[in-house]
Structures are given as structure tokens and as C-alpha cells.
Length: 213
Image (spheres, rainbow, N blue to C red):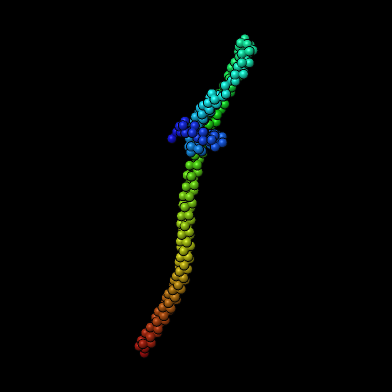
């Protein structure tokens, strides 16, 4: 919301009444808002108004001075007045030009201050966003660390299971090898028994056969 001329003038009067200088920053603090360029515009008018009021309230020329000037003569007074007016006109023009330059510089400075103020507000907003993102990333990092810990534990458990399975497979292979060796031994013994049985049967058959005269 834009501030009004009345707010700026009232704030300036209050600062002067408190014996404080009515600077742009002080007026802005007094009002609580407003851009520096707007404050500058109304503050210039306030200063002009005060200057005019001060000029109009000056003490009039004393009668003694008027009488003395009258005695000097109208011609001398007219010449002096003409020279003074010419000199004052030159000084006024120089003062007006200097004032215009100063007002231009001040206006540019106030515009720059407004831009810096906006950039500061934008930077504060960006910093706030970055802090929120940082908090979110930290939360995500914490969750990932928890997941990593769980996965690490599962991997260690699976490795233990794999080692146990390898031991079981090794034991099973050993048992199988032993069983195969026993089977081979049994087969060999059976073949030996079969040979012995065949020889025994042959002998019995020969011994039981009738003899010839």
C-alpha cells in the first residue's frame, strides 16, 4: 500500500519535534512502510513548504534602515538593487541547477535503495526456501541412512545364510561321497560273493556227479 503525503509530512514534523533529523530511513521507520522514492518525493515538498514558511515569517525591514536607504537616494538604491537582483538571479539559477542535480542524484539513490530493498526481500525469500530444502534434504538423507542400515543388516544376514548353506552343501557332498564309496564297496563285495558262490556251486556239482567204472 502506497504511503500518502500527509503521512510523510506528519512523520517529518514528529521527528523535528523530537529534535531528530527527518531522514528517509527515520521517516520510513516512523511510518512503518513505504518506498524510499515515494518518501523522497513528499519530503522534498515538505522541505520546500518549511522554507517558504520560514521566509514569510522573517522580521520586516526596520524603519531606521528604510529611512537610511531613502536618504541615500532613489538612484543609488535603484542601481544597487539592479546589481543585487542580477547577482541574486545568477546565484538563484546556479542554486536551482545544483538543486536539480541534487534532486536527480537523490531520486536515483532512492530508486536504487528501493531496488536493493526488493532484492533483499527476494534474497530473504530465497534463503528461506533454501533452508526449507535443506531441512527436506536432511530428512531424506536420514531416511536413506535408515534404509541403508536395514539393507546392510539384511545383506549381512544373507551372507551368513549363504555361508551356512555352503557348509551344508559341503557336508552333503562329503556324506554323498562317503555313501558312494560304501555303495562301491558293497558292490565289490557282492561281486566277490557271487564269484565265490558260483565256484562253490561248481564244486558241489562236481562232487555230486556219479563216478564211472
